[in-house]
Length: 391
Length: 183
Image (tube, each protein chain N blue to C red):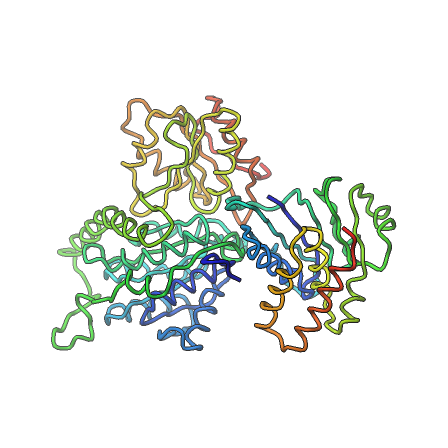
């Protein structure tokens, strides 16, 4: 299974190992494909005595997140994982977790939302949570899912942040694929995540607090603005945590997004998640043919690094934004962000919007190469196009 | 980078063999991917699994369309599935069958290299009963992987799940599969 530090692991296994190494006090979860094996592996670690967490098996995802909120309010380090319908069912409580500033770290194994019912990957589940107040980080491969799960713990618990963090990885494409990944030594992770010292634990009876009460119009607004302020602190803290993490591992993280051969590119693609890997292969091939193409892969989607992305896309001829979810009657969620980020620029690149990969529809190198071809054609600007779909 | 496709039926261990191959390739210092194609999961239904093996980090995350090697664990899938799809004449078709390679060539119309042996018979003789491991043995030979490295990995992986005597039967079947074909 291993060669040096390198191991063949599925996305499930790397996330379960990250959770084991974080050693949360409480994990409350309900099974749903393609997330289930994460919690199965983690539960086995608990049963085998390899981690000392309390696993709460509940009757639904609504209850899972409710238990997480209760546990986090009590002062316990708390994690969960879900996908698709599970996230949809827990959504009511996801908003509450964010508003209660509960630093819960949750994995989302991206899967299409019903209907029609489908177990395969797209981003419609996590995109439905984009306005909930959780931080969202998207991983390209199992390695990133592992690394970001560890970094998420620090980010969530940072005193200037105190928000839930959602780390996503593409269902099946990453969760069920055995791939090469490197885990850090347990004690390195223990030192990196550190002890969790909650600011206002509900179980501190000597210093009683009220949490999650009713808010009238005289204060609701201000409490929401506190969440806005907390979100503003995220980028700087994330960069600091990345820097520290990079010093512990062979991986280099320094940014809210990854730029791949982007600096001198005339044509760029922007997309989230595992398809970035496929796009990098295409970028390399087209670069060999002398084409100046590049890729921008946001790691962080909430808060959205619009300013930084605007600067990174300055001077490009044309940019294609590839969304893996729909917002019916509008453009894709990622496209809207990019479009908004560039809206005040006098000279902006031509913008193209694509939808791809719904319900697990494959996207191959040739499809991405076609997008780069499209970008040379000004007539295709603006109109939504669907990749590898019968239209 | 090399791409490999497995054809099997649910419950025959094609996915397990694919993951074992990934473990073996890792031991050679390679980068790997192993993933099954998921549909409605039923015992006996045709399934596919895939491997990618590379000297460098594998970044592509799409499906596999043009494999260099196809391994068929269940003989009935030669007609029930389409195992030569996307396989060029430079490729290798490795089949568990009682028939001769020439016969498989004419049945499938495949113009490339066909390697055929009775993996089911091999597994029955060894006592393990599952054709996936002898097919894996043959595939290891096709790929030019060191036999001892591969055997050690199969032993280590199977020992985590199976009693020692069953592991030994599988190792016999693995060896017989390795020796069954002339690459």
